[in-house]
Image (cartoon, rainbow, N blue to C red; front, side):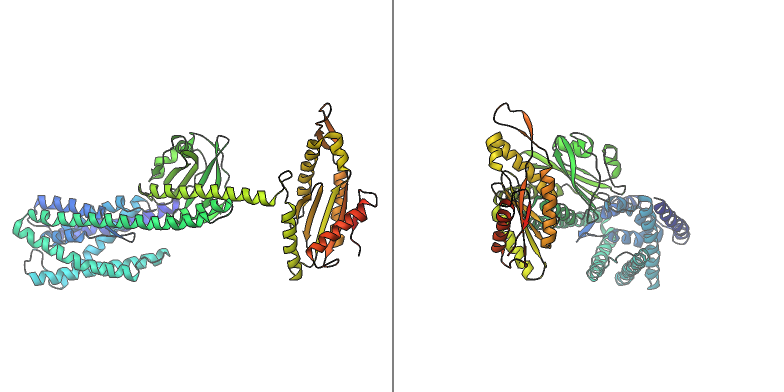
Length: 566
């Protein structure tokens, strides 16, 4: 804030040194004569409207206000033209969004256009132009020079200003061509109004301003249509990309980043209803995902909670419009806000909040685009969840939640190929089997046996090394695949696992007898085999570890670890 204040002060002092003394100079040396008050009022009103409703091309406003200020200059001189232009540029403060403060924007634009008026008037007089002249060719030449100098000096000044601010220079070649083309539109319009005022009087404003503003309206409507069409094309593309994601997390990440990209926002937050509280599930700021700590919001609480409760989107252009309703983390530089409920089949799924540092960054028509994107999002999330369930069902054991034998065998083949290609130097397999598990089922019932299997699966999963995988191979048999582990390391891991299982209290409720909770202890026999030490084939490795388990551990007395011996 302090930096902004200092910048504003610098612009103010520059304005104070240049504009008031310059106005006094213009009044003394170029005083208006025979001023028509009605004309002045009309010039001021139309000039303000011309700035407030500019023609927009590719997001850049094209100001044609000089077709009004130039006739005022030709009729009444420099002082009147400066006053009308200064009033007209006030419309810039309300029509063009910017992160700069209103005072800073006023002082900057006021000073710039004042300088342009003075230099352009100098070019006008330098080629022999005279205020009030009706000599067509002389007026045409002087006005043309006025307009050219105005455009060139504006380009030079803005280029230097951008370099000073270390900003990307906005005046590309196409923009320059457009600005110079505007000269050939402004000059004929200005001269037409000037000469027609001398012929038909006040009616000239009617004859020229009505078609001008009508054309401006048509161009703006066409530009909005093109913008909407562009949004729709981008929305279709993003919807296709989102639907191609496999996991729910990928869908959420893709949605947050792409929505932020389409609307050029600085902030994007996704909220989900979790047990009656709106919890943030993803935060995206300045084109990066952020791990930000939010407090959960109750339904109806704060901006997000109200949007969820009322199921109505909201748009705010200024921070002061929504800041009082905020009940959670909000970036200090966020100004504009677009917040919409995410619905699916008439049911609210969550809330999307988009924010921008710019003021008035969002328009009403964008709500329909966001709503369409949210529809793609909810469908894609549902699809990803379905696919994950299908994958889980195909790859996982229903009882334990661990990988099933089919997945283990396919994974073992893949890992063996990586051993062959030297990705891993070694690969070990550990197979364990619960000792006397039939006795457990017979004593406590099969449901109790299932409870033990489920609890054991959680312990095996918790003990899994980072790069390893574990699964239920069948019945009471479980398998670890340990890439990068030698036979010695795998045997040590198996021994620690055997000891931990033997000392664990498995609490069950017997489904036979009195159904009281009981503590059960189990032991496991474990076999170990490795590649390429024992074999270079995946299925042979499985047979080897099975042989180590039953011959080396089971037949040797159980509750022990055995390694495969050729």
